[in-house]
Length: 266
Image (cartoon, rainbow, N blue to C red; front, top):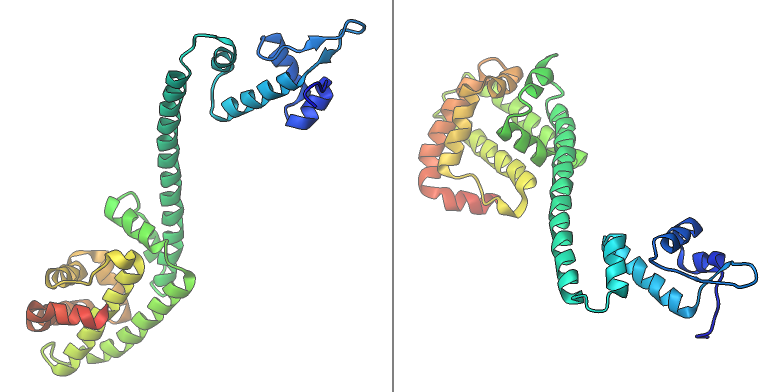
């Protein structure tokens, strides 16, 4: 078995290395075959096969042909140091590749998030989504798109239905005082809906909307024109009524009972 002789075509077949590449390895002195006396054809032995398998491994580790030649033939080469240096280069390349992969994943999530956002706001007036997408490039907005991109179409449709059902009931209460128990019960439902949506988006890292967090959400309803437009699309005046009701709910219910409310939702 150890005395096997291989033609260039047979060695190519065994290893998967092309004949052209084997010819090149011969030319640069990386893997020089014996030559038959009668016809000068290339002949490879079992030793050549072992060397070629080593070359294949080193190539997979991204060594240059010059480095491989030194590894194979230089008698006093520090193999450990050479391999260590190559490992460092590969680890650096791995980090760079991972950064590229992460960037691609973020872009894919943003694109998926854009579709989900359009689905969430499919009932908005014509041109609303176009105005919304002009915010693309803003770090906070892109982060939201990326998070939305992690949700399935089913999850988005469910969240939209729940929100629409809630909004349909709430718009019938706009003539009722924001202090009333009836309105405050609907605000409690809104609080749970927001918690549910954020839980879907952020997963286990989300621990519930706190007192200050809900006040921030309330402020956004009036301070961000796009957010205000979303609620007023259900009924003109809903945004302002909801804002005032959320402030009261935060002070009366969340301020001293936030852990209880988190437990109810999470």
